[in-house]
Each structure stands twice: as C-alpha cells, then as structure tokens.
Image 1 (cartoon, rainbow, N blue to C red):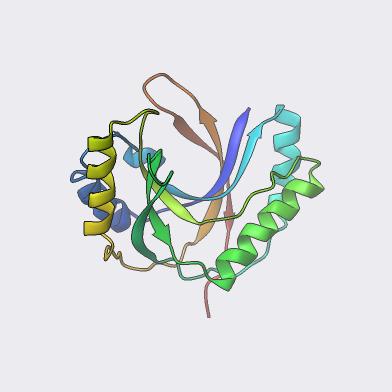
Image 2 (image 1 turned 135 degrees about the vertical axis):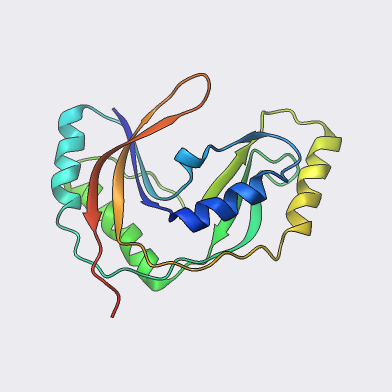
Length: 183
C-alpha cells in the first residue's frame, strides 16, 4: 500500500489554486482532488505497517497552526520537473512534520533523508522539456512571484493511500487525525 500523510486544503484555497493553475503555460496539472500539503511520504508498505503507523499517528496531540501560501517555485532549476506554491514554514508546521516522522520511526518504517520544503504541487513536467517551454515556465514563476492566498488553520491531518493510474494518482483517505483548536 503506497501512502503519505498530508494536510487537506480548504475549499476557498482549492478554488484559488485552480484559478492559478488555469494560467500555467505547460505541464500536467494536479487535479483538485490531489492538491494537499504533504507532511511525509510514507512509501509502499504492507497493510500491517500502515495500520501500525495509524496507531502512532493517533497519538499526535498538537495545536493547529497557521498555513500560508506565498510565491511559486520549481524543483529542477534549468529544466523544471515540478511547479508548486510555496508554503511559509512555521514552528507549528515543523513540529507536526517532525511528529509525523517520529510516528513513522516508532511504527518501524524507514525515514527518508530529505530536507522538508512545505509546498503544494500544482503541475508536473515530463523530462526533456524544450528550452522554450522551460523558459515559459520559469517566466510564469517570475511573473507570479507575488502569489498569495488566504491563510487557514487546519482542523486535522490525514493518512492517504495513493493509487497510481496512467491518468494520474487517486488519493483515498485512510484516517483523519484532529489538531487542537488554536488558542
């Protein structure tokens, strides 16, 4: 079972991201159903391991935090592979990310060594983009550097299963974990 842990996005933010996506000059757009803020990619594991992770995630007891999107970026400098909306890092978001990773460790799952860069993936690009297409994408990022969306305080975070299909991934919610109301 291929899975990940993420914060779902509220409807008004999904609407704003879809409006922005309509102006992206190239690439395969992420569908509304797959827009989220990843906390940790869990990977492919047997159902028993995912159930152990669920038990550990259920123990997380943290307050909600402000989530703000600000700016656009790409992974892949000269030839972009992913276009995304940047999420402003906060101590609360970092604490949740670290708690999810600790839950993975306690469940016996491997923890990938990676630098966490919170973001919402908007589009993906096939390898070997033409210079012209790369330039158009990078120009789009520059023109939309001032992108901002209304902040929100998530009520919860979710364990999702990711089912890969030729037409794109399908994300099915496996479990939802509450965050305490911000005081």
